[in-house]
Length: 155
Image 1 (cartoon, rainbow, N blue to C red):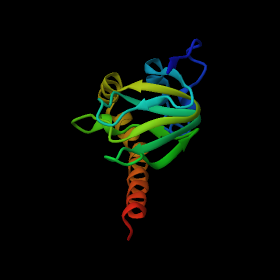
Image 2: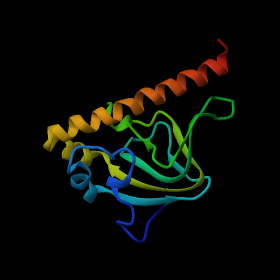
Image 3: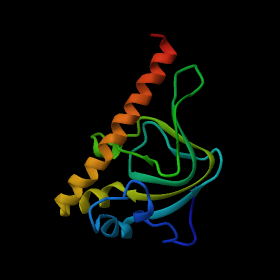
């Protein structure tokens, strides 16, 4: 993983997660954003590590994987441009529940969890709007996990 040399090249307001968001939400969070680039095979997050950021994927592909004892990892879902990674930072204890690995060169903007929470707490209307946008992501991610587990264990 490398920090991008040209900060600000990607903009929060251009990401699908923020399209149609209340006016000013992306602009208020923009100063927190850190642009990152991941090469094929790089690990973005590892299960059990502290969930310390919210990741907006702009381009590339990221495999969400469950690590099983004595078995190969199982890909639950593959994310691409316009998708987001990371809601574990909202739920104590803030630990990643899956591994996320770049399966193609990937560019992201990442918002650190502590400052993001503080910004959303400082503007409760923003926090509510943010959570309403994030909740369908959580539901969809859980549904993909359920379907993969059914495939693994049979109906």
